[in-house]
Length: 243
Ligand code: SF4
Image (tube, rainbow, N blue to C red; front, side):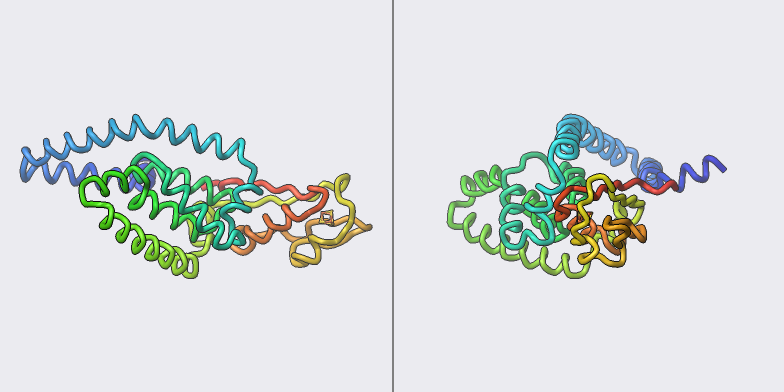
């Protein structure tokens, strides 16, 4: 039973192992070359990922959510798009390093569109890559490709943002949100109740939580009410649901 649940949890790994066994049976030479390639990437990942994890820890613990929401959130508008373009452009390292950072940014309130811009820019128009492109293919080639690629990236970001919502992502779907109002901090201005009457209500001149929000429905709205509360009385935490 334990083995079955382990296999279920690591489906991808099991599939890769099976693929190796099949290739080894059919063509041992190709299997050896696959192992060599895999080892190469494994070593590269081991060199890059510690730095990336360190960056995500710094981002998680030192950069306030409000800063990320203001810079890259739903309401950051075109300025946020440009900031995302800049962040992706000055990045370094392979594209898989961008995923943990993107997940952290998403968790801190970055919008789906801006994550698409960061990932796409990181993959195809980051500065070190442009410098090499200009050197080998010429400046004109590089500039025209850059302009067209950026237009395409913005279009992709817009379309993805329209069709994919945060509730669709596994990171949010597996979260349980706990919302709380510190009565001693609340000054009873009623702003949160006005913003989200389905989650907050007034009781003896203090706001209280009347319904626990579902992250699928209201993560961004709740985060906005937290930022707008003048006395920082609203606190919330997100926890992974027990599987
Ligand atoms: S916005 Fe903040 S201070 Fe105003 S009622 Fe809500 S919790 Fe209280």
